[in-house]
Length: 417
Image (tube, rainbow, N blue to C red; front, side):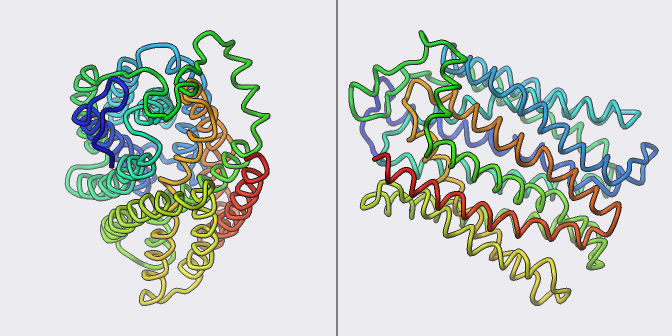
C-alpha cells in the first residue's frame, strides 16, 4: 500500500487506524458468533426455546442493527467518527455481558437487540473512516485487511464460545465476551478523523460533502445510482446465504452428521479462520490487480467467486461423507470470502466521498433487511416443519442468485461509465 501522506493523515496514522479498526472488527464478529456456538446449550437450558426462537436471536439482533444503521450513517457523515464508533463498541460490549444474565428468552432477545444498536454505529461509520485513510489505488487491500478480521473473529466466536460453554456454561461465554470491546472503545477515541475525501485523487471529489445536504435527499439519491443499488441487492443475497450457513452449520453437523458439539464448533471455527483469512486477502489483492485494467473488476471478481461457491456449498450439505463434505465446505467458504474486500470497495467507490457513511449505512440497512434478518429464522422455521438437513439447502440457491445480481451490476456500471 502507498507510503504517502493521505490528506492530513500520515502513513503511520493510517496504519494505526487500520490496525485498531481491524481489531474492533474481530471482536465485533467474535461477539456475533458466540450465539451459534451456544445454540444447543441455550436450547437445553431453562429458557427452552424452539428452533425458530433460536433463529430469531440472530434475526432480532440483525433487525435492530438494520433499523438503526441509517441513523448512525447520517451521524457519521456529520459528526466525529471516532467518538460515535467508541459509543457503539461500548454499548454492544455491555449488552453482550448482560446476555449472560438473561433469565427468560425475552430478556436474552432484548440483550441481543441492544448489541445490534452498538454494532450498527461501528459497522456503518468504520468503512467511511477507513476509506479516508488510504487512496483508491490501495483501498481494496486496506479493506481486505480490515475484513480479514471477520473470519478470525467468527472463528474465535465459535471456538471461544464452544470451549467456555463446555467447561463453564453458556452464560460465562457472554460475560467474558464483553470485556475486549470495552477496552477497545477507549482506544478508539485517540484515532485521527481526517477530512472526508482525503483518500481520493481529485480536489473535486474532496469538496463533495453531505454535511449541508438533506438526509432524506441523500438516501433517496442513492436509489438513482443503478450500479450501487444492484451491488447492494447482490450483497443482500450474499448476506442471506453466508449468514444462514454460518449460523446453522455447527448445529447441522451435530444433528445431521453426528459430529460432537465441541468438534462441530471448534472444527468449523478452524475452517472459517483459515478460509476467511486466505480468501479475504487473495480477493483483496486480486481485485486491486484486476482493477488496474478494468474499473469494475471488484464486481466481476465477486460474481465469479460466488457462482463457483454455490455448487460446492450444495455438495457439502448433501453428501454425508466427511471426506467429501469437509473439503467442499472449505472450498465454498474460501470462494465466498474472496468477495468480501472487493464488494465493499465497490460500494464506497460508486458514491461521492462526503456520502460514504450514508452509503454504507443504506447498504447495511438493505443487506440485513433483505438478508440475514430473515435467513436464521427462515432456516429455523423450515427445520421445525421438516428437517435442518433440508432447510439449509436454501443457501446454495441464494448464492447463485447473488452471483447473477453482481454480474448485472457490473454491466450497469459499464453503461454508466
